Image (cartoon, rainbow, N blue to C red; front, side, top):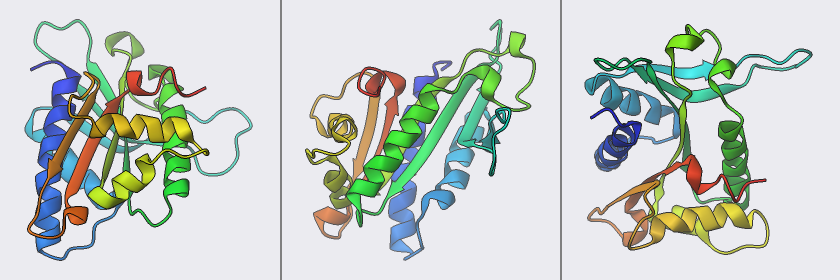
Length: 203
């Protein structure tokens, strides 16, 4: 299927199973080890992937250049332009929900401000579509719910996360909960949010 949403749906499903596998092996899980698993899923479905895609440095900017975690692109048969997707990835440990919400807010703002021309060395702009933007979150059930609790600080972020806990998900939210033989708190939640999830809540 050509729809970028389908790619994200497959990544959410595949990554949740991969996390259970890692947990069974007692492997260390962090944000960066998620990139290769996501990359393999996308490449298996015919997408080209760049990890830690650099953004164009603004004039006068200091420090390390900003980047997007993952960039996907694919030229479908008979399509006029290359389909482009950008993805930010977060792994929530649940140790500091306030810091997690602040980091998620920062990612949402970065995604909202990222257009095709902001992607360094991405190719000919005339032949590429503007990117569809997604935020993916992986966490144990307990960690995810801690960040989703109603709070005074970064309330919009908590509200967005709670969308993934509904019985009926909005069309722009994809979520898979994968149980294990461990406590329910250690079940895995992988959720991806399209830009519509935050576009009206983040100012």
